[in-house]
Amino acid sequence: MFKQFSTAIRITLLMTALTGLLYPSLVTGIAKLAFPHQASGSLIVENGKVIGSELIGQDFTKPEYFHPRPSAAGEKGYDAAASNGSNLGPTNPKLLDRVKKSVVKFREENPDFQGPIPADALTTSASGLDPEISPASAEAQAGRVAKSRGVSVDETRKLIALHVDGRTLGFLGEPRVNVLRLNLALEKYSNK
Image (tube, rainbow, N blue to C red; front, side):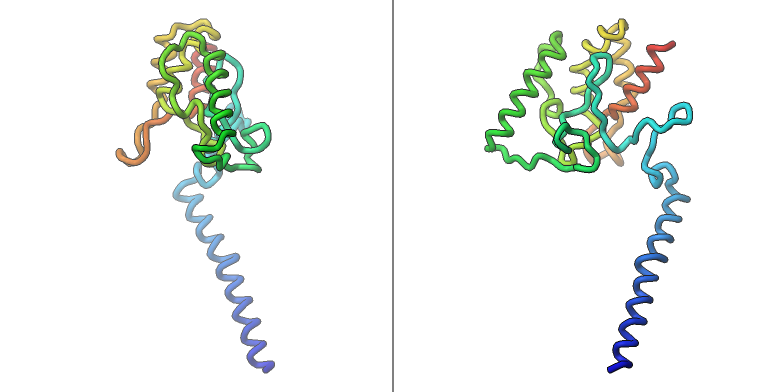
């Protein structure tokens, strides 16, 4: 019996070392060599200071910035420690109430926009931390942002167009705009 117990302990230690230490270290090392930006969290650094990640949405609320889609992550939203969707089904009255509030808020923040509101401006993502919005959502906010910054809507739309990322591999997903990158470009443009 001691022989079986000894063998079980040695195999457990070996597998722990292989799968818990060696394999993760190897994969992490390869990732850091092949994809250093992504392996480090896709952090955006300005003037030596980390200001965010390309992969995690931030709550921009000032009128001079493009706003992300609503978040269900955490009590106040945009809490990376509480990443999740609302899990509210399409017949849930709470979802309908929240979307109605989002419609009112969007119309108050963007009074010059008269078209149909893009769905991603009203609904949360599965993670609650989506860093991107649709080009239509950015366009819907262009008037407010331009007015707040004292620049023309055409200039703002050109900036949006420069920051539209196409479909992944040319056919996966939809075109999108990273809100943090667009707002950083807006800051640089406005400070010229």
